[in-house]
Length: 312
Image 1 (tube, rainbow, N blue to C red):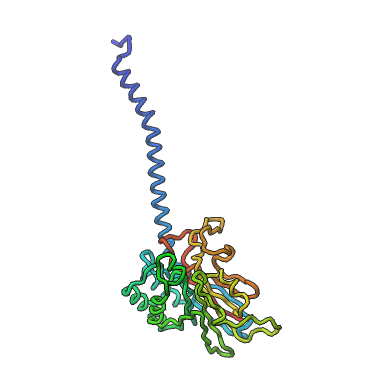
Image 2 (image 1 turned 30 degrees about the vertical axis):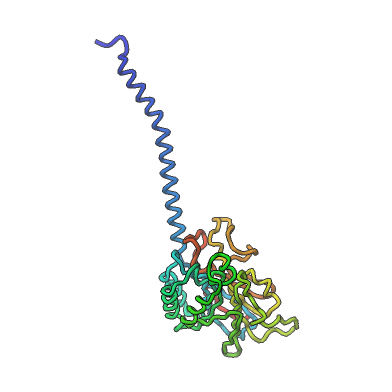
């Protein structure tokens, strides 16, 4: 026999169940969002770390009218190795190994070999790593702001780049610190010059560069200038050089996807954060660098740059 009136307990149970569903549904949605957001953050952080070690080899042709006809010079340009807790000797060794696979004629290293402290052990390991490759190819370098000097002293770092200088000497790297070298090539002499770091107030072009010729006769020699910071170009504009090799920017290290915008690039001239640029009749090449700060990169992979210098 059917009940003529609803059972009070059953009705209360049904109401409680409906209320529980109404409450739990928003909670579940909120929890899903929290979990999705957390996984997204973890995944994003993992990708930033992954990209910081995702090496890219790029090749560019640089036309220099001062080179003899049919002359070609292949240069491996690396910068900002930044040995640190987030960039290991193994990371640096891999970049050097990959770069030399391209069979360059010369290797150029444009500063910031370290990020912070260089201990006796890490200095020895670094020198051993570099020496494996400098034995195979003539290697030249300049210093960067992290290698020691006025800029680092203000931040509690080395007041002098002497530790890095000794490491490079031990590694058979030819350091061009406001100095020049001449290399004999078939048909001409190649001049290699390097200046001190711009931020460290150590850039002294008078010590290694001639004043720029204002006459109609072109220079007979090709001068390649190693300069860590591309912003120094204004200080160097009245001197003779044909190609300037720079680093420092890390390509911006963090670039907004689809906008090609690097909001944190450490330069005044944001039009030059990476790549090959023509400037006042000369060429400037800025490599994105091998290492990084903080162990992250976004839309800006570490770069092994191979430049092929050719005549017109």
